[in-house]
Length: 293
Ligand SMILES: *[C@@H]1O[C@H](CO)[C@@H](O)[C@H](O)[C@H]1NC(C)=O
Ligand SMILES: *[C@@H]1O[C@H](CO)[C@@H](O)[C@H](O)[C@H]1NC(C)=O
Ligand SMILES: *[C@@H]1O[C@H](CO)[C@@H](O)[C@H](O)[C@H]1NC(C)=O
Ligand SMILES: *[C@@H]1O[C@H](CO)[C@@H](O)[C@H](O)[C@H]1NC(C)=O
Image (tube, rainbow, N blue to C red; front, side, top):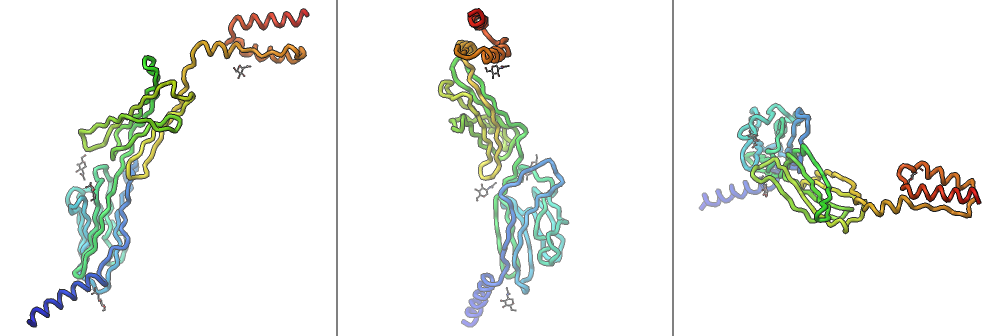
């Protein structure tokens, strides 16, 4: 009986210690996304700050990637890296000179897109444990991003193609004409884990397009702020007849004095190269009529 009470008391004490003054992660710093750039010398730092009571002992900090150990630091010992990230963790990195914080963070050198995943920080003492997990997307920016709009003369529609190459994680592509999103057909290279090549295509009937039209492709990576745009202006090719009519239109006021007539003729001369011969003829005859009247 005495024994049972003693054990119960022990368990109770342990539980209350764990839930009161024990170690607690207060600032877990794993970004939602990280964009790889050409500067490979810049490491990716993941940090895990915690509060620890002065009388807690046996501190062990661990980092896990998708549930697998990649780093471990036992207080008063040297930290070490292991597993898939072994060669990519700089174990000399120290965010703080405080004894309890010295090697709590990890510095990932030369990060790669396939280090995208769930990162866990686990902090443990003899008195308690605290864990935090967060997903980090490592973005490998595209090597190429192209947009093309071409008229399909047979079908009388506009074919829009937007393509992106060598990007990770898999992106989303949206095609818009004058700000209105079109339905798209997406083709992605699915065999690999990444990086991906993705192509989106859309069609729209030419007579439904208000020309000139702004054609836009928006590239995003879901769950991140990553966004890029490509834009092109499409002008519907005008039928030949319409062009002819526009260019031959002359607006001459017969009531105007001769001085004004001269300036009109200068403007016409400037565009003479694109005037139809008939127009020239009519201008000459109008001149003749005014001159000889
Ligand atoms: C630490 O010590 C203080 C007093 O010395 C005590 O009140 C507290 O419960 C202890 N905390 C832990 C986690 O042992
Ligand atoms: C990432 O891919 C490379 C090969 O390209 C491989 O050597 C490495 O182990 C992979 N890293 C992870 C964390 O899967
Ligand atoms: C990370 O965790 C979330 C939530 O548990 C899960 O949906 C996701 O698939 C995980 N990511 C990886 C790469 O394991
Ligand atoms: C030629 O005509 C266009 C309009 O069709 C006008 O904008 C341009 O200024 C003209 N050029 C000259 C040299 O008058």
